[in-house]
Structure formats: C-alpha cells, structure tokens
Amino acid sequence: MKRTAVAALLLFCGSAQAADAGKAPQVTSVRVFSGDATITGQKIEVPDKPKVVVSLTTFPPGSRLRVHKHLYPHYVYVLEGTLTVTNVATGKTFDIPKGKFFAEMTNTWHFGRNNGTTPVKILVIDQLPPGVSSNVIAQSP
Image 1: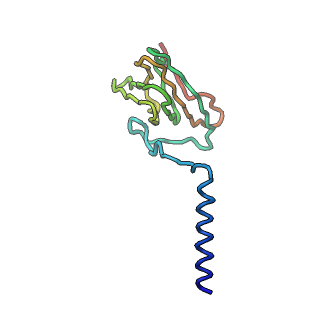
Image 2 (image 1 turned 180 degrees about the vertical axis):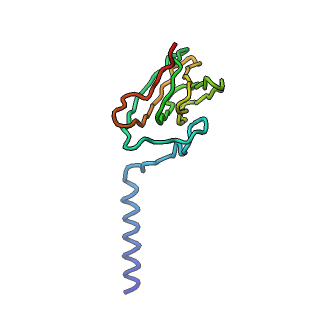
Image 3 (image 1 turned 90 degrees about the horizontal axis):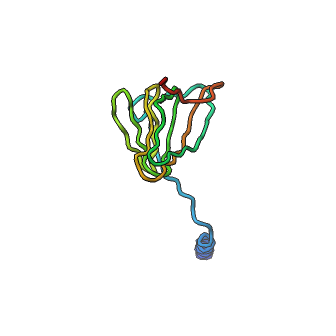
C-alpha cells in the first residue's frame, strides 16, 4: 500500500512538473527604489489622504525647466536619457540616468535639464493634498 501511494505521488509530481513546463513565463518583480528621504536627504512627508497624479514628461536635447520647487512628494523615474537636476541654493547637480528612480527635493529651488543629445523621458508621480492641482511652484523671474 505504501509503495502504491509513493508511486502515485511520484506520478502526480511528474505530471504536475510536465504541466508547469507548458505554462507561460513567470512574472518577475525588481525593486527600483526603497527609501524615506529625498535626493538631498529630506524626510518624505506624505499629505493626509493624498491624490496621486502621474505624468510623462519629455525634455528635448538641450532643454531645461524654469527654476521651481515642489511642496509635496515628487517622485521621478527616468525612462530614457540622463536627467540633470540642479539645486539652486547649493549649486550641487545630480545626474540621474535611464532606469533610476529618485524622490526630488522638497521646498527647495531647483531645475531639471537635458545636457545630452537624445530626449530625456521621465515618469513623474506626485502626492497632493485634496484640492491641490499642481506640485510645481515656479520662481518669479
């Protein structure tokens, strides 16, 4: 009886493995970012009951944004090219290449630029408090 049970179990396992071999490839997940601070070390403070806004932004070669700041969490994933972000107060620059994710500095004047010869494409995620429609405050000229 034990031999019959073992033989049945081996037959079942072999059948299950053969069935698994015909299945679609397995989904994989790779962590891109994990942290609680911005690129400049500020603690990320998420607004209560935030609205999430997701945008795709393209920087043509040689382009740059005006000096601006974000009052709420602003996350960036670089899809193509290398984005250069400059902190206006310190002059420090951060080059973020394709495939990298970062939390942008909060309440700090800065700008993004494409110093390369191909477009920079980024995916931006903002977490905004209820009633707020934009997370970009441009510096007065």
